[in-house]
Image 1 (cartoon, rainbow, N blue to C red):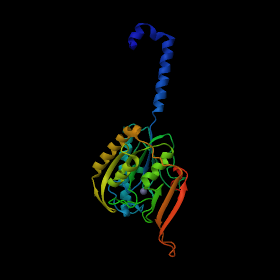
Image 2: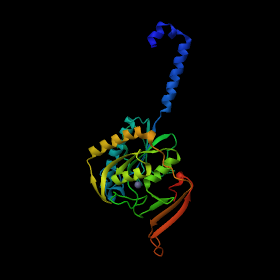
Image 3: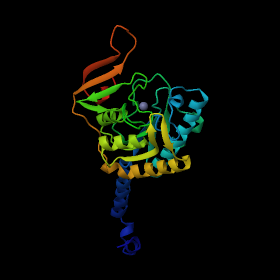
Image 4: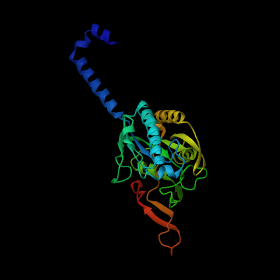
Length: 288
Ligand SMILES: [Zn+2]
């Protein structure tokens, strides 16, 4: 029976019908509120379109670094647009590169942006109200062959990290923090090696977008930005659809952690240093 038939029957005028329609609209509003889709985007610089030299990423205000930061804002804009068009209701971006990459006047509308130092923690603002984590402009872990600008945390001291014996890079470290809040990685962007690492750690449901192919640590096959940003936009939309299939990245806590790094501070000690610790949960994975 449709509305006009209801009216003809006189039912539309009854208090019962009015009460039912109010209840229905309340229920619809509640359902819409439950569909809040908040996405947390953490960014890095080494996996951005056109970035393939440390000279582009280790400084902030050299001509090369400023240009790389513009490349970064272009990739980020494509992803923000894709997330919003894919149904994200709130996008929070954390400028995650060590010396920061954000250029405020190039910020794409439709997101909020956190930058600057100091910060009270790493993935600040992230909590269980988010439905997905995006890792934008990332790089493969230290030691990955043919991976552009591969490193883990520090490219200068060549840090390497193992958690319960599994060597892990920054992708897994970030995802483990998000995993503490039950938030799954839904999109990873970077070079082809970064995408392979994402698939190995997060499974095939997590969408990956490769914006370059690594040839050596500072050599890559690059693609025109028009093409990479189209792929980033499409990847972000696809990631929104993939959310129900993506799983949070969880380790077995507490975790036995090992860190290896080079130190030249004390000439009487060997350069290669190893540190071990037990980490209680994902929130503390970057504490040592
Ligand atoms: Zn990084």
